[in-house]
Image (cartoon, rainbow, N blue to C red; front, side):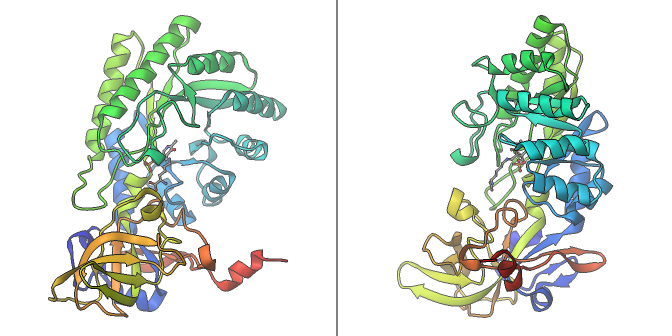
Length: 427
Ligand code: LLP
């Protein structure tokens, strides 16, 4: 999948399969996912963190049953944030105790379902949820393990919409406002709950490790306060996800091993100086695992050159299969992958087929000037938050996910059909 990034044009193969053949067999648009790459990234995270830590793959980035099986086989856990994600994880055989349940407004049925399934822990996000979950666990006669999600006051340097740990936002209980400490007080007295630790997630697509370091320090600070006030040492901390990936050649992401050692060092050092034993660490990478493993394959439908401006290249998908450009002004690269071309590069904008002008997939890209209808384009790094945020806008049919492995390509999520749409429309 990664080779596409550096190629302006030329036939591309994935796992030994020519993309033209993939387009022929599975149609376009399609997400093409490299299973070996996915598994390798899982192992890299697993190995980097070692036996003293847990890696929870953040299912919101992209979840399917095949993915859950790969995670299971590679020794990762999974973080889910809805009843739907929980169902996918359980139905693919992920043991419930390796599932963490997230969300700022989980419904009562979702919480009942999670407790009944025996999820490893629920990450509690509010005072309201503490009470609700305590009641549900009591009803079911169990003690539910929980972490409390705190907002540590770090403003991650990322797009405002996806920075989640500064104070003025909906997630978690604030440290500086004293809400985190108060939630701990309540959690320790409520029946049906076993407080295991503290959770922090500071944002997404982050390159600067400093934010994680501050978060780790502040979370350990809270553990020290808890020990002083209650005489208990909580055994776990979870520092969330958020590690950035390369969308264009300008991005320079860190390696899991560097991240792991930086985080583990800080936690160890801070705990030692606070007189705490080192808690078990967990992390929740989503994008960093699945993002680079897939690209979207589109077919060009129309080419509209605008003299002195740019050329609009319309493809057969768009904001319904990748909302990130429209929503976050995200940057992607693109390459002509069905043939080589020695034509001059032309400034292009790759747009979709939806009825609005904001329907942009790649805002600025150079593509060969002889680009023509029928050519295939690949947009790399679309494994995270593209299929999972896909919509049926204009009654578009969501594209399939085709996994390529040594055994060849196979569909792991099939293309939607018009019957799928009509099945829901029962009026
Ligand atoms: N843990 C928690 C509690 C989270 O809220 C998230 C992401 C993650 C882990 C995984 O973060 P990652 O490692 O994937 O950055 N739709 C946006 C991203 C939203 C992220 C939401 N939470 C995007 O397309 O950029």
